[in-house]
Image (cartoon, rainbow, N blue to C red):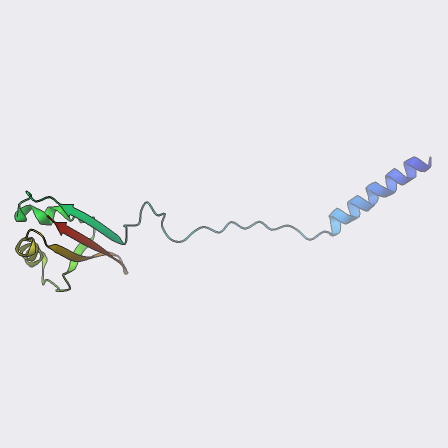
Amino acid sequence: MIARLVTTALCAACVVQLATRDPVRIEVVRELAPPAAERPPRLSVIDVAADVAPASVPALVGLRRHEWIKAINDQAPHDDFEAEQMLQALARRGGFLDLTVVQTVGRDAAERRVLMLIH
């Protein structure tokens, strides 16, 4: 009889504890930045072989969607045609090209650098 009373009292105490306990809140926070696989690298290095023609150097930059060349060796071209002409003119053996590439999507703009080493 005493064992049944003690067992009932312990069960009642557990029910009271569970009823008066603060509720547990689990919150999952998602990362706002896109995964690293979707973001372009901040710096790319392109090694151009010696036998590559200067006319094919602009194609090696590999511009992605919504990207454009903002500066070549810290000189801003006026348009895409001038950027291509500057790349062809500055692509000489033993030199390098420092490109600033900007990606614009909506109001956001991401900038990356491309260093082209020409052998």
